Length: 173
Image (cartoon, rainbow, N blue to C red; front, side):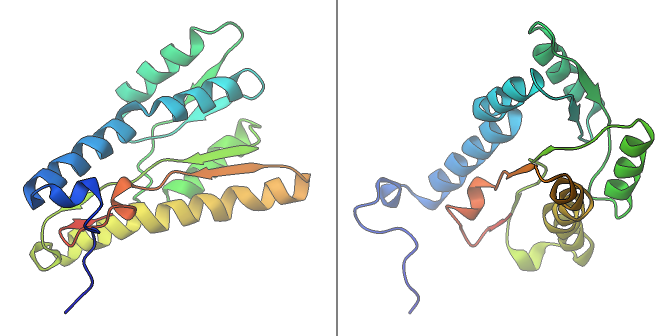
């Protein structure tokens, strides 16, 4: 018999599995929608650094850029890109070099959470999850961290999925 994921004194233990899944979905949605701490980090960095926002959704990027640019002296560059695509990070790095943008602080917040039995996912969907959650993140690190090291300064914030903390068999994050 396997070890229980939730301990008896854990308040989550009293929830039914369906309630746990809904809680995780809600927490994940809140974190992904606009985690206030991520927004605060971005806003504080924007005063000292040029901020480049990257995500698939150009509309969401522009909305966040407008929110950040409401602060005095803040300029934000929006660069839509699907980091699940194998060449996306390299294309982004090339575009930033051409624009003479140096990345000193990298906030990796891209990722998806999939619900359901692993066996029910197609091999293609499994690969898509890996491409974004693992390969995309790793490519961004590989492309931008060496420059930070060469310059003697840089910071990386990798934002993990709540599903990695409260893992459940039906979640793949």
